[in-house]
Length: 269
Image (cartoon, rainbow, N blue to C red; front, side, top):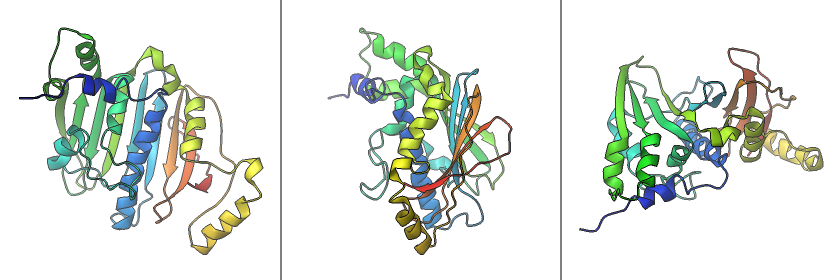
């Protein structure tokens, strides 16, 4: 019987991106799609839906979390374990191929997907052993199929949680030394400003009033205040979706761990 060889997994992980920062775009897109779905179904009308990116440079850990629907426990294996078999509709959602979430495997020793779903009292963690995957891919004598390798590197953990909890979290643990740029809050912030834009640059100000006027006409919530900047060893970036439109408005925050102050910049993407 024909098989899918391990090189497919190499192409979808180590060979996926030339620029490691692109994984931020992939995970933001996935989270944004879930927020759009939650908005469309009015699932959490009294909550501010957002994407929080936490970069812990000393611990070499990256966390990307949204508080949209999450994934039901019964669907975690299919939706996160199946490769290139996404339910998303091309042209209607930001991601659709079902492969972007694997990108993080190339840059860390362990990749975790952690989720809860409203109404369920159990948190599910799907753990991908990226270090073992790398060893298998580099072993020329190992001719395991892609399916067999997935069985070897994926495991699950479960823990009780509040039934009202709903979130999806991506964790990259022990980010490789060769990918220090992923832990540089300044570089990450600048990159995210390109894929989830902040305020308009000075050279774009001639069109900015027209765009803001359109936003006001569409009754989208918007406000412009200067963002807060600063280099820190541990920082977070928050993207808050405030519009019911599919092209949402973002609120980007960078703060030190534990700081509650917020500075907001809203711009359509």
